[in-house]
Length: 219
Figure 1 (cartoon, rainbow, N blue to C red):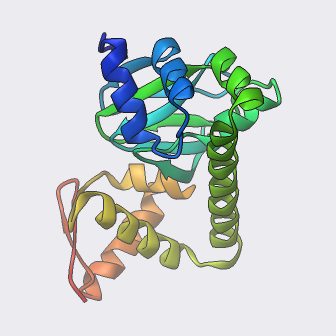
Figure 2: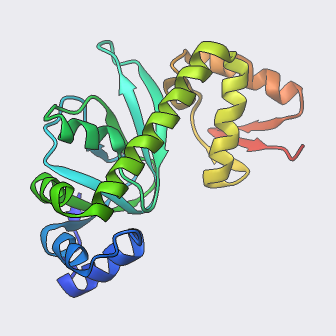
């Protein structure tokens, strides 16, 4: 993670562009004065399990994957956050004065605005628009978590894999560069199961498999 050293006047513009719902000029100025714009490489850990929350990340560019890990290191994808969004579970941890319960990892190179928790706490008491942004992120996260629970509980792994591939198509286009193990990690299963299901999808002419690539056919 590296700080971009952007002047405060430019950060005000960044805040306005990425958080247009923050309408109060003084709140935008406070966010610009207190926050840091950082650049993260693909695969960087933004927040790890049990991390003490010191800053709230708001994505300016790129995509961050949010997942949950058990004690044995098995991972389950929860949702993605993109430009103008924050990790609502981080916000919840901050509001409840708890350590992180999730893992947030950059899926692409990312620029993010890191808002100190002290600033976020102050604005929760003083800014209606910041409150609305926070509650909107929490509600979005709640809806996505319900969808994840529904997927795990009520959908077959075959259906979940197809949905995962379609989600990746919306992020990266028809050709996805990914290992079978990475898919298995996201879906909470084994590489062997994913490889078998992908072979089945290839037999059904839904995908074309390459070396660490999957190309989705147009149906």
